[in-house]
Length: 486
Image 1: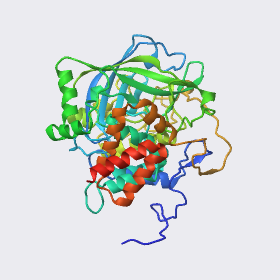
Image 2 (image 1 turned 30 degrees about the vertical axis):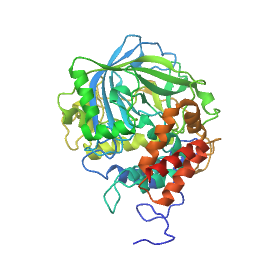
Image 3 (image 1 turned 30 degrees about the horizontal axis):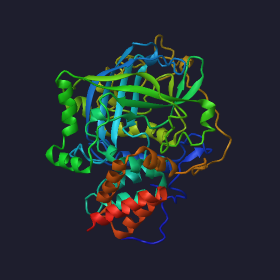
Image 4 (image 1 turned 90 degrees about the vertical axis):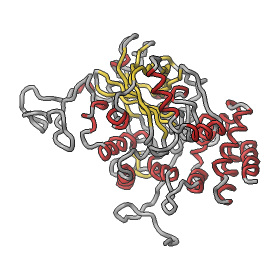
């Protein structure tokens, strides 16, 4: 049953004034925990599926190491980068994003690219994707976006109307959509794709100077993608092709590797740059901020048990170490909450005690006790509270304080994007200047194949959506859709 003029409400029935922008302390300020609607919406979303992950459900993983090849201590004090030649053990997991555990590896979908570093300062998780941008810039839209990639609530089938209805009403998504609908949306294997942090992070050096950074992992095997026909054939022939490829490649005695770089921006420049650097739908042009080489990611050992090590692996962008900090990216800030909340729901409150997630290189010293599946001795006879006067118990150390940053004295509200902005400029450049003629042909055909079963009014909006980016882009999509519908 549907009604007209129904006011959107929070989970407790209170009316909501804005469902596109989270509440923050000023336009560039951090998100506020008082935003009950955002927290309630994310927390509910995190608990929607049992037991598989809501996103990144199907994946493959491997162990290896990260080796520093270039000195970046002028930017970052994290010990993982302390000297050239240093190696840190890692576990990496690659995944599709929207699909279920039984979905095909060759599905058109972004790919998760997550790396867990077992450092002497604790776990550092680099939680990225194989694309440098994302579909949305505000986390309150995230549950809605993921719903459009899942099954229709009535038919329990994927529905192109849901997917394209949302995207064409969300102009900021067009950059990621253009990448997804290109052949980059169907990598030939996990070994043949790049990885990106997508989000902006803050690095702090030993002098307490800070810089904005983005992480890039360039595959040493070279980029290799399927076109639409090849991807469809692979889905039918071997739905687990990428999982099988990574395992067999390492099992044969070979390794998979990526060269890691960062883009670095001085802190003050970040607030003045032509793009909002905290908007995850935007990239930093390499002509302005070139890649700085850092190290090498090498994977050379397979897990011995998929469930224990890959299925139970739990990553979070909030798993950081001194010298690497969260930025003012709203999507990143919300993910710092959402990822561990998901793990507590899926794996239990003691998910960090599972061996693959355990910070064994640094150890753990805190006052968290009890809970489901507590298997590490539970603190023994020591106190479970702080402050305490018991000799030898853990104490905070101000030497590890995060970098302080100002928050503008603004009113708390749901701020829309106000930074000078053009959601179509970067995807227009990608389409016109980066893609080849064959890339543009494949792109239009891939879009047409995805939208051909959508309703006519959605198809019309899709053409208008891409035409706003570039008239030739829209024309090609329209012609491809006409051919697909014959």
